[in-house]
Amino acid sequence: MLYDVILKSLSHNQVAAIGMICSFVLTFITLNMRFAFLPHDKGREFAVNGALSKGKLRGVGIVFVIDFIACALLFVPLSLEMVIYLLLIFLIMMSGYLDDASEKPWNEYKKGLIDLAISIVTMVNFLYHNGSGIMLFGMELTVPVPLYFILGVALIWVAINVTNCSDGVDGLSASLVIVTIMSFAYLFPETLGIMGLSCRLFVATLLAYLCFNASPSSMLMGDAGSRSMGFFIAIIAMKSGHPFAYLILSLVLILDGGLGLLKVSLIRFCKIYIFKDIRFPVHDQVRKNMGWSDTQVVIRFVIAQIVLSVLYAIM
Image 1 (spheres, rainbow, N blue to C red):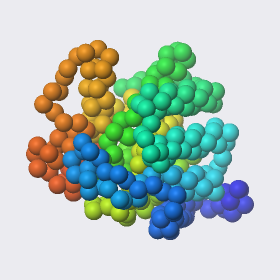
Image 2 (image 1 turned 30 degrees about the vertical axis):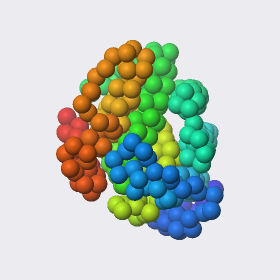
Image 3 (image 1 turned 135 degrees about the vertical axis):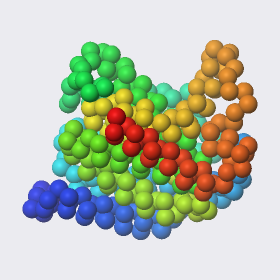
Image 4 (image 1 turned 45 degrees about the horizontal axis):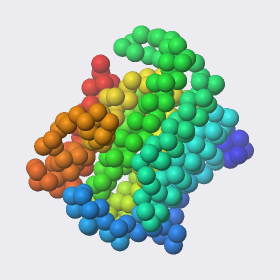
């Protein structure tokens, strides 16, 4: 591993800087290759401006996630726990890519069961290598392991699907995820440990992706990217020791993508009809009914999340 051979002579900040540069450059180069195996978007029938996506490269999350994994293997001091996380993020990415490349979209229940299985394996790995202690309102609490397991599975599943549902405006989900990841890395550097370095590598790959996805975009991450981003956020939320911080540090993602999931679930399983006059995801509501441009959506949503992160930091 490169870290053991060369990077031990460098400071943590130097390793992080070199790793981020390599992650950005590698991702920028590989995305430029526009691999032939990448599918093309067919447009989204019910999304605002969905037809504008037709013909664009889709599923490029497979490229930047593999780039992230490669750089993590080179620059992050590896443990068994970290290796398993990298394997799991590869699996969640592949499940998204296979759906992106499929002629017929996968059934929601199929994707949900895959997410559940990966969430369960992730929590087994997490609890084997970590305790069940958390910080909440400045107090250190030890959560019973069975309860922590259930809550952790729920957090991972929700984070995957909320982030996936928020992907629909050029540059939006990647920009919000960058704010969330860097908020965790800035607020909890000691508890995150080596995961803090992986946060910076992931952000660098997303910055390279945004070079191609800023409005008007030439490529889309697809489920391969959005599901991987949600999974990664859930992991760092738990590794930070402040899993409930996810509710604030990802609040814009939760409101944008999660309310739609809640609406559909209540209608489908409970026959309860709510938010009848609101279009979901919320980014479609503000574009369709409030006349916001894609750029206005991205900038305003990102500003809102930055403000929320700052407020959390001073609480």
